[in-house]
Each structure stands twice: as C-alpha cells, then as structure tokens.
Length: 134
Ligand code: ZN
Image: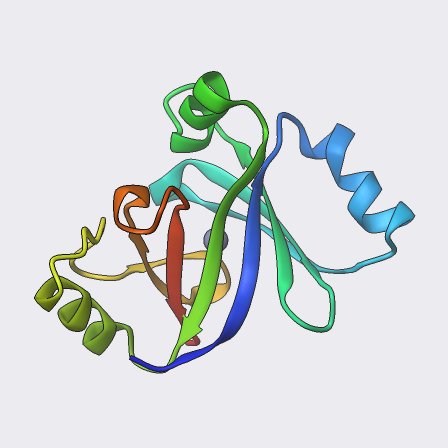
C-alpha cells in the first residue's frame, strides 16, 4: 500500500468546550471544522497544523467508543491516521498479512474520508486509522 503521510492524530477529550481552546487559541491552529460522525457517536473538531491535522474527539453518548476509551485509559492520544491512496487495496493487503482490520468495508468518516482502523494488537499498541481522501 502507499502511505501518503500522516493525515491526523486523533485525541480523545472529555469536553470540546474545555479542551479545544488550547489547540485553537494557545497553539493558534487553524480550525477547519466541527462535525458529528453518527456511526461512531462522536463529535470531531479538526485543526490543521499545515503538516497533518489534529482531530479532537468528544463522545456524543456514554456508549460511544470514545467514552469507553476514556473510561478505560483516560483522555489523550487515541489514534494515528495515515492517508492511503487506495483503502480497498490496503485492506486486502493487510488481511493477506494476517493484520487485524476493524472494518473490512471502509466507513465514511469525518470530512467524507473513507476509513478503517487497524487493531492495536497488530501495531505494537497504537490504534491506526487509514483514510482515503474523498
Ligand atoms: Zn481519525
């Protein structure tokens, strides 16, 4: 597969209202949008650093994967996302190498990207997202 770079780093936060101002006002990152991803029950708040984005993730409900993550491990870095040129090809290639892919069929994530995740047990402990630009 062809990795085109780090698309974003996903950070689980308790509260966008409390935590986003650091990224927006102290670091002065360019805010590019806020959207809800209903399939993940999460609100994403996205900032562009110029070389890769920061994606703040706030749970929309207690059964959101982000709420469960924060309960277990606390707020902080949740995943790293790489941009790929062809996500369908990437999934096939990963499965051929016995890598645990979370969505065998890519889902539509924030900003319309097609995404899947690689289980941390296959990566040395980091949740890795792959995303193809829409
Ligand atoms: Zn992400």
